[in-house]
Image (cartoon, rainbow, N blue to C red):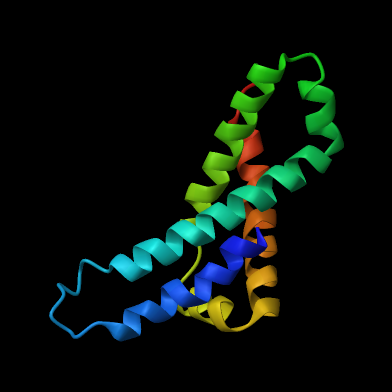
Length: 122
């Protein structure tokens, strides 16, 4: 996860290196930055999900494959919802400040994990 977080500043700051000839709607650097953010959110989601007692109880009767499928669906939902609830300003702050980065990722996962778990039918 630290490797991904270290890439976030470089990716976000790479947008400053363009010459302006790119289509403004095709913001590749923003898309890459969001992908890195979603990956960090996914990893944090998996950690928090596996630490939840109710998740441990509900998945204790599942096969490892089915448990992985449930985890993928829930954390996929969290990653998708997280990207809808974060602004580019917040991502830029996270790229510069490690404390802001950790806070943004943790808060985003906390705000969306329960919603995504409740949507999932075991």
